[in-house]
Structure formats: C-alpha cells, structure tokens
Amino acid sequence: MTTKHFKDQIIDLDDLDSSFPKEVIQRSGVNLNTCLHCLSCAGGCEFSNNMDFLPNQMIRMVQLGLKNKALSCSGIWFCVGCNTCSIQCPMGIDISTITDVLCQIALEKGIVVAEPHILKFHEEVLNSIKRYGRTHKLEIMFRYKLYKKDWFSDMGVGFKMLTKRKLDILPSKISEPEEIKKFFQKNRMDNYAGQ
Amino acid sequence: MPASKKIDLSYFPGCSLSTSAHENNLSLIEFSRKIGFNLIEIEDWNCCGSSSAHSINPGLAMDLIARNLFMAPSDRPLLVACPNCILRLRETHQHLANDETKRREYENLWNRPFNRNLKIIHFFEILEDIDLLTFSKNRLPGLQGLKFVPYYGCMLARPFTLRHEKNYHDIMEKALSSLGAISLSWPYKSRCCGTFLSVAKPDIITKVINKLVQGAVETGAECIITACAMCHLNLEVRCTLKNSIPTIHFSEILSLALGESEHHSWFQRHLVDPRPMLEAKGLI
Image (cartoon, rainbow over all chains, first blue to last red; front, side):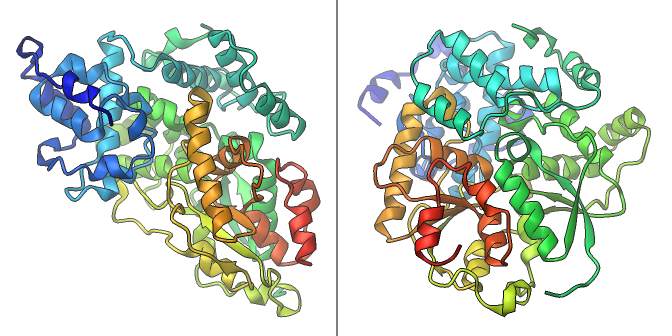
C-alpha cells in the first residue's frame, strides 16, 4: 500500500449509486455490511500489494455505493479465489464471491476492465473449453501470446515446458463438444468464440 | 501386500492432471491401485470451468459442472484429484441438492435423476485410517530420512459455503511421516501459489514463488511436496532461484515409497529432476 491510495479515496458524491450495495449483496448472497475493516483480508492476501484497492477497501466502496470506482478497480481481477481472506476474516465474509460478482457486473455494464490481460486469459480458457470441452493449455498460451503480441518474454519457460512435455501438443477432447457449445449459447457467452 | 479385492471409485482427473501433469495422474492411479482402489475415469468428463467460468459466468460454470455430476455412475463414490475441481463439484452438488428448480432443469436436460447421495471425495480421503506401512515392501518405511516441507497452497482454505465440510490439515505430514520421512515446518504451507496469474502476471508470481521456495530451502528441506498440479507447475516454472530444490507430487512420493514404481517416466518430466537427490538418499 502506498500513499497514492489516500489521495484516491476522496469520495465524489456524484458517483454514488444507492442501489449498488443492495445489488451486490443480493447477487452474491454475502452480507458485506458486517465488515470491520480490520484488514485481516489484506494481510492474508498474497496479491494485495499489487491491487489498487485492498479487499476491505473494495467492500467499503460497495457499502458507500461507489459503483464505478468499485467496478473499475484492479483488485477484483487480481483475486484468484483462494479463499485465504475469507477464512481469516473474523466476520466470515465470503470476499472472493464478492469480487467475482463485481467482475460479472463490470462485464455486463461494459466498464473498462482494469486488468485486460487477466480478462483475456479467462476468455482464452473459456474459448478452449468451448472448442474441446476441456482446456488445451498450449493453445491457450499461444492465443494469449498472439493477443499480447509478445513472443519473447517467457520464451525460456515455454521452451522448458515443451521439452519436458508439460504442454500436450494435441487437445484432449470430449466426444460431443456441441453439448458444451449449447451451454455457452444459453449463458450468452457465444460471442467469446473464435475471437 | 494385502491381496484383497480392489474397491472401485469413479475418477475425475480434471484438465491439469490429464493434459499437463501426466506424472501426477499416472502416479495417483498407480498408488491408489497399490492400496486397493481401482480408479475408473468418468467417461467423457468435461472441464469444471476452472476459475475462469467461476469468475466471469457462474451460470456457465454450473452447467459445465452439472454435466459431470450427472455422468458420474451412481453406485460408487467420485474421487477428485484437483483441489480446485473438487470445490467446484462439491459446491454445485450442494447447490443442486437445495435448489429444486435448478435440479429439475438438469434432470430434464440429462434425462436422469440427480444423485443426492453421490459422495465426492478428495484423493486425501482414501488415506484416512490406512496404515501405509502395511502396503510397503517388507513393511519397511520407504522414505527413511527424507526431509520435506508440505505445500497445500489454498486447499486448506475453502469457500464459505463449504465451511462445514471435512478439512485436510496435516494429512501429507501424517502419511509421509508414517513412511519414515521427516516433515519440517515452514511459514508458507498454505500460501496461495497464484494459480492463473502465472500467465498474465509472471513477474508478480515469480516473486511469490521465489519467496516460497527460498523459505523451503532455509528450513533444510530436500524437497517440496505438493498436492495440487497447478501449485506444482507454478513452483517449477516460476522459480528463478539457483539453489532451488525439487518439487514432487504427493502421489509420486507415496507411490515411490511403496516400492516398484514407474517413477523414472514421471521424474523425467520435472524441471528440477528429483532423481539425483533421491539417489543420494538411497531412496531409488
């Protein structure tokens, strides 16, 4: 955490949306109003140093109805759902479910995503599942690199993984990938195909 | 070795084990067979959606997981090897047990009843109440003197909805100590490895992983034992330390400890080959 956070924490009253806390609580099923802001979550999180706002600060933004700020912060994308924060929370708040719901609302509302690379990775994983019913790591990595137009970083790691056969060349597929494609259509995710 | 009849279990390997961590998959199947369990892969299983579907589209995640739940044979427990997949499978199973509308929807889709009593067990659970020494060659501890640190990653922390379910504290320490290995304590046994951030944020994950591995080296451990294929991959590919130590899958070391195993084909897939260390200790 650096001092820049404090400057960013000035509350702009024009940005308030009083229905936002209710929306997040309803969708997540998590009562985030019990948060004590004790920072246990941030202390346990391996990635809180890399977030623009700490987990309890994200909760605070939701409590106050700072919708745009909450939806455009990087922390919601950094959260990998390891649940460490939740088990360290004295009030048992399921924080990773909140960050997931914030990611989902951000995508639905077309908010500019703070961590586009992380989102792109998720999209490539889903593309792979849609194509094969299972993830094909080599293709996910290849397509992610194609998007980043960055062929040289991580070359050593990629080469080592290939020589140690940690990345299968061919995908493992299910017999009827059409079944899986229907799930994507049903959940309005078909636009992720073949991007 | 007791020559009793093997118990059949359905098996959900998940993408990591079946497409990249083959050595984890093969050693798990071999070890299970050695202690009397026959793992039968669910025919045509699909990806659980991983963190990606879970974060972005929970409806899609539920459809993907439900397909697996409805394909699992009803007459035997379902064993899951991946700590992430099992959380997703259990959460959805619990959700469907309590949500009649959703349950009906899937029952109509798959044209078969929802198996409310399906037992979804983690690989660790078949180790409970088993004396591993009875399965080892001449009942000798096969890991005598091996100093290790256990790495659970995030698998000891569970989502809030599963807070009342069984937990796995100390299973690796107990199992390996019973086979003669020496468990060392370190501060990082349940720190998150960063999972998928390894791709999008390699610099951040390299720092996290180097801290973990350095911590393990400082305890005097000869290896890190992992219970998750994702953790194993991140520990191997993101560590940039010169003095790194091998990372070994729990299933590999268990199978090796019980004698006669295919370990050479597994260990040659490791970035840090554990064989020189194991040879020096006289364990292979």
